[in-house]
Image (cartoon, rainbow, N blue to C red; front, side, top):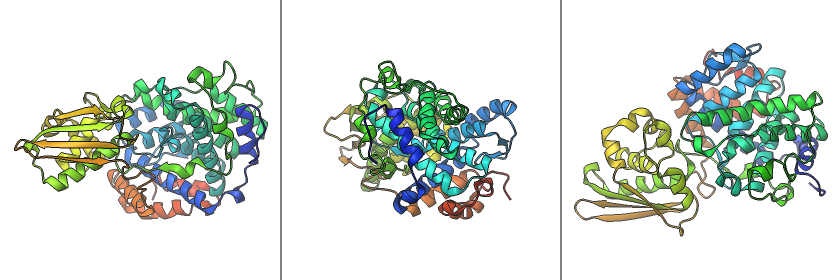
Length: 451
């Protein structure tokens, strides 16, 4: 796409409004389906967690006509409430996708409002898929433009940038003009919220859930004629400069419509922060090599970059702590030989053997290890010592999960929800979503009350 100098919102608004489905190539369409398969599976797996129960209970009395699907649940809510609940269900397990350059989990905030709005209005699958692709692009390009300072200042980038992606995607679904989508993005700038300090608590859910809901709100307000200042995103007192150290406009315009951020999304094999995946890979390898008995382990040293230490060098009190813990990730991989959903639940956190092994883990900075990598050394009580370094974790761009891997992950999540019998039909429906004339019947099959 040829872009002219101007405001970020204007450029992105024109890009979204003018994009044509027939110009989206087959590979990118397939990646979008992979993202939805991954996300909806994680939402089903997390749907019955008490955190999701609580938010659904809070929103239900205020919902409008309750007609839209909650993945893995039997209730129905209106579009805004359904977007919140589905977003939180899919993000809760820390099992969703990741845009590694920014650490945004883009599908969590973009897919739920798109699917809710498309279901409500009987829109076709191709329209929803197109809007989703564009929303992810907007969220990730804005993330690129303010990274790394934005996250380093404490902004939870999944939520703060996700609201822009949700607004753009919903604006596309509503058929808004370029100027209206520009307004929606400006409105989203006033709704962008979320702090990194809350990542280990349920308050994180509020940020990501609001990003999904507020995207619908921004688009609907713009459709009704609400406006925003032209420089709401990148002006002197706009969103980008209020929330980061600098704004690089070239990250918005460079290769727009030609190079797609969705193509670089990675998918998690483990339900925890992505920076801990290399730790788990290394520990699983060491367990196989050394045939370790837990009581024979004297010390475990994990080395990695500053982000790994900043996010994961923490005490573990709850399952949320465990999902962003170096110590817990290493302990369950070495002790149990796996790192699935059960290994990060409350029972695993409280397990005495796991807790004892966590206490033997020490984290150290090693600036020579690339972002996303880790090195683990295990020392035993009889003097053995072995180390494994993993620069590229399983699931990364260098070692991506296949379609079959994602299908297996979907089935695992469905089994957690007691819905394994329907998983194969649901997987087939998602691979064929582009052909659906209306998303209503397709999405209703993902509720817990579907026949």
